[in-house]
Length: 185
Image (cartoon, rainbow, N blue to C red):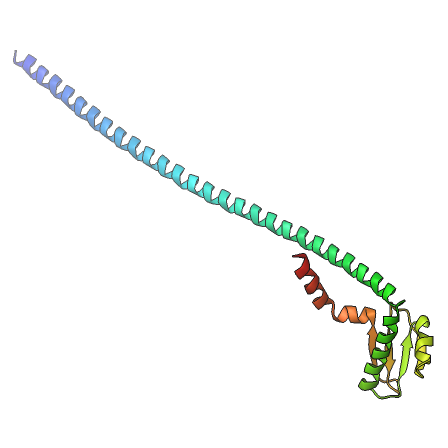
């Protein structure tokens, strides 16, 4: 019987060892499973945050690009409006040259040129304006293609002052556009 006791003890020890190993295996398995779940959760959170950040950046970029495109469209429309306004101004200046007020403006332009240079000046103007200026005893040079106004030269032809409507529009374009934009906006 002693061998049976001995065998039973070995069998019990073996069962206990197997049970301990199974318990240790289950504990390690559980620990690994917990670590795996934690790591997966952390990765999911990380990539979820990263995806959210990227999508917010992309959405922001798209919105800003849309705003920029809207501004471009608005500025294009404003510039088109300004261009058509300048065309209307030029038409009105063309009509203005047919009024008696225009003849007074021509006289003021000549006076400005005389003050700038001296009384001996040569005036270049439209063919239509030559008779008005000749009547005032002004020396007329070549005729020019312009909406209206004059180009005056000093007596020796080394200096000139451009008082044509086109030049006056060009030099005052920024002020005119600012005034128009203030009225539009």
